[in-house]
Length: 154
Image (tube, rainbow, N blue to C red; front, side):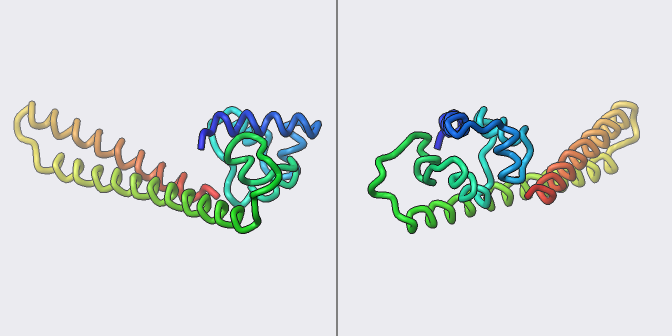
């Protein structure tokens, strides 16, 4: 699954339907920036939008996933249902992976904070303690940001 090829195919099919990015975005309930990201291969549509996207662009799901027109015979509704289920599962796993990375960063930040509290005494140890505390705060903030972004994403 090549996002750049799929994005180019989306752009081609959108233009073939004489739709602007704004018009397609309105039909799907997303922003025109989201359409641009899809067409530039920077992201993929959510699995829940794919049936409507295929309907608007008058393409099948296998054509979309392959990034090219397919012969009309051979594709069945069962294949499309299986593909949608696979995409849903993949997106769920990606979300879980991001959530896990965020939680690991938070735990690492807490560990750095604990290590910072254990050091101290000499000037060098105080410097190291302050450095560890700064790193722990930065790591925890990154983890909290990643967890928040993951939980707020559709």
